[in-house]
Length: 173
Figure 1 (spheres, rainbow, N blue to C red):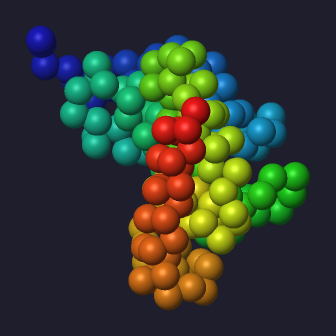
Figure 2: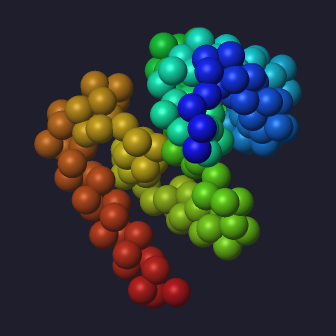
């Protein structure tokens, strides 16, 4: 592949951003469940991508890179409390779980499996469901312990018990 100039790379990235904008918007909408917030998230993602274009080694991987920027921006905003006021109709756990659901080629079966798993987790007693949802969303044991005010050993135990209960539910079905 021929060596690209800086302006060619920026132009290619800009074209890639334009072509991926709709996909990024729908993913952001899935995360935020709010059109304005989704548009803001896509705009912030575009800004960060253009600002940090040198971090993208190969333009062929730009879509994965853009999704990663969008997801990380959403998670960072969530952790900093930036979006807490716009998520009034959803529980904290549902928001956290959504952050872990990066589309995997938009496979309907995979999306169904994720929804089924979340439905199963909701059937668990809250003392087990909450830490497991946070764990599935990508939070570490330490972060979960800090956020819930529960000792880390107890968090590990509850997540382990929750997994065992889920396994038992799946075996019975």
